[in-house]
Amino acid sequence: MSRIEALIELDNVRKSFGDFEVLKGISMFVQKGEAVCIIGPSGSGKSTILRCINGLFPIDEGFIRVGTHRVHELKSDKAMRSLRHQVAMVFQQYNLFPHRTALQNIMMAPIQVLGHDRAEVEERARKLLKKVRLSEKADSYPGQLSGGQQQRVAIARALAMQPEVILFDEVTAALDPETVKDVLFAIRELVEEGLTCILVTHEMKFAREVSQRVCFTDHGLIVESAPPAELFDNPQDPRTREFLGQVL
Amino acid sequence: MLGLDYSWLADPAYQRWLLIGVVNTLKLAALSSSAAILIGMLGALGFTLRIFWLDALIELFVEVFRNTPPLLQMLFAYFTLSTLGLRVTDPSTGLSVPLLSAFACAAISLSLFGGALAIEAFRSGIETMPRSIVDAARSLGYGRWARFWRIEAPIATRICLPGLTNILTNLFKTTSQASVITVPELMYYAGQIYNDTFRTLEVMILVLLIYVALVSILTLAMARLEAFMAFPGYGRGL
Figure 1 (cartoon, chains in turn orange, blue):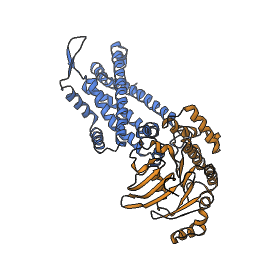
Figure 2 (tube, chains in turn purple, green; figure 1 turned 120 degrees about the vertical axis):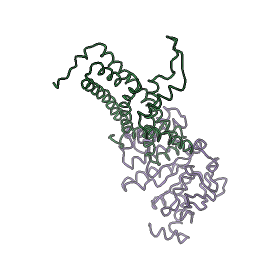
Figure 3 (cartoon, chains in turn cyan, yellow; figure 1 turned 90 degrees about the horizontal axis):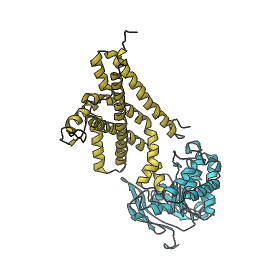
Figure 4 (cartoon, one colour; figure 1 turned 135 degrees about the vertical axis):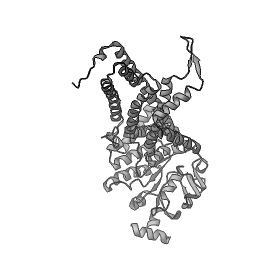
């Protein structure tokens, strides 16, 4: 894959928190419409990669491009507004705004940040709630919803921004096993519709089924990157083999 | 009963004093409470900007006004502000009067005292905000100001309301100290009345009841506001 074609491009990205270097030179490309899973042990920098891509963490060194945005050069939230329109994120802890209903959570940013028309946004929001099969919960507050329901609202909220890319940060890690499948179902639909997705996940079976490519990270580096069948069935690196041996 | 004599209360002059006293107490409380809330919000907002010298300045302000007696602050305000030499000519009488009346000095000093406490209350609300909520807002494209007004402030307000109720009731009661610098509020006229009638106990009981009534209205209103702003998952929200 050439660099120019890629929608997202990371080159030798380094990031430290204090003395601890979390990312030690991450390079990766993601094509438009591709679903890429990032797997790896805790603390290997998976979530940090996502947060650098949408500018939540400034990087110390390297190059990040999303579409036409040179992320490493954007310094303020204001400068990143158009990037955040293009790249949405779904979090492990859902992070819905507790003082607003499910429907309002979905409508807030498109109206308040993007300045879209309220009536049009409400129609969009109701469609998205229907899509994640939560139409009847439109007027419930996050505190009244289960974890799985909150996470599906969070996915709808991300989609309401009409992004080109969605970053999923261990979105099923905090959920009950029986609600995980509802959330994975919603994500699978998005991938099949051709939305570009980067997923940090511990769901190996899901990663194998849904993604076109899997990256294995360890100690701040991408150790191995391959189509799922290849990476899971015939891992090349001993570290990948060891990790997969532990989790599979 | 107890030989209490309230016959003085029939005197229209004393009734008028009490009424003026109550009105001035309410004015002073309303003015300084509003200003204190405003100062509290601005100060807490200032802290979120994470500017080194601004943090130090706000910190200093809070420490000075929180750690000294409000009575001392009021006397200090009265004797410094009124001697600054700022005078205006009263258009109705043609006399030269100090620009800042005793009432103005009391209002300013109470506002600063309440404001210092309110900054800490609002700050507690903002700082208990989960970091992840802020991340979510940023990832949705909210800039610093929109994030503060649309997300952080509404949630923080809910969290700090009980603390704010404490501060406002205390501030209301502290208005009584303005009597010391001759502000004609309830406590001041109470003194006038018992100096006139020597019915100290009777006057004090009455004034006490008036304060209980007024402060109860305030706390009741704050409780209603709390219930109104409640949302599920936080405090009493269902």
